Amino acid sequence: MRIDLVSIFPDYFAPLELSLAGKARDKGLIDIAVHDLRQWTHDRHNSTDDTPYGGGAGMVMKPEPWGEALDQLLGERSTVVFTTPSGRPLTQAFARELAQREHLVFACGRYEGIDQRVIDDTAGRAEVLEISIGDYVLNGGEVAALAIAEATIRLLPGFMGNPDSLVEESHEDGLLEYPVYTKPAQWRGHEVPPVLLSGNHGAIATWRHDQAVRRTAERRPDLLPASAIADDLDLVPAV
Ligand code: SAM
Image (cartoon, rainbow, N blue to C red; front, side):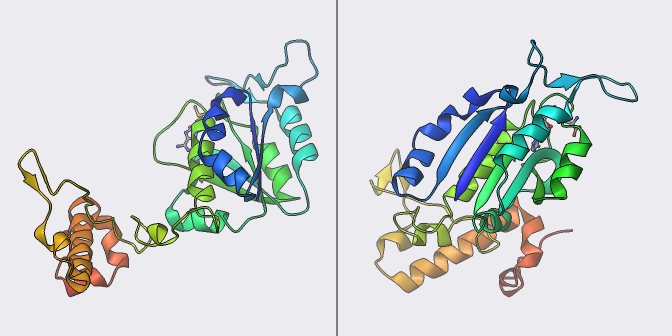
C-alpha cells in the first residue's frame, strides 16, 4: 500500500517514523510519504487559507494548493481521505475496508476546513472518503489521519506477527475484548481469575466470551443489538 499525507504541519507525522510505519516499511508492506501543502503555493506568504464567502468566523483552506497537490499525487487507483468531523465515522470494519485499498492520500484540513470544491473536483477523478474519528472537533486533520492510518496499517496482511491477536480484539466480533492478565498470578492482593490458570481451554474460551458480552452490555450497550450472542445470555441492553 502507498500512503501520502498532505498537511500544512508535516511535522505532526513524525510518530509514523517511529515504530508503526518503520515496521510496515521494513516488511515491504507500505510506502509512505509526507508532504507540506505549502510547496503547492505560489505567493510569497505561502498562503493556504482565506476568508469564507458568505462571511462568518475563521478561515477556509484555499482550493488552488489542494488542487495542485492532488494533481501531482493521484494515480489511477487512488483513494483520497478527507478528514472531517462531518465524515463517516471510523470503525474497525471501515479500517478493514481501507486496508484493501492500494493508495491512500490523506488530505488534512485546518481552520474551518477545505473549500468544498476540492472535494467535489476530486470525486470526479478518484474515490473520495470523508472520514471522522469521532463526534468532537480537533484543531486539524493530522491527528485524525494518524489514527486512521494506524488502524489501517496494522490490519495489512503480514503486519502482525501473530494474526490471531487481531481476531480477538475489541470490535472485531461486535464485542469489546474481555479483560486480560499476565504474571504474577497475585499482585497487591488482586488475583487472576482462577479459570485462566486452569489449563482448561474450553472453560477459558467460555469465560472470555461471557466477560466480553458483559463488558459490552455495561459499557457499550449500543453495540449489542448487532450481536445475537447477547440474546443467548439474556443481556439485552436497556433502551
Ligand atoms: N468547522 C469544521 C466543522 O465544524 O466541521 C471543523 C474544522 S476543524 C477546526 C479543522 C479540521 O480538523 C477539519 O477540517 C478536519 O480536517 C479536522 N478534524 C477536526 N475534527 C475532526 C474529527 N472528529 N475527525 C476528523 N477530522 C477532524
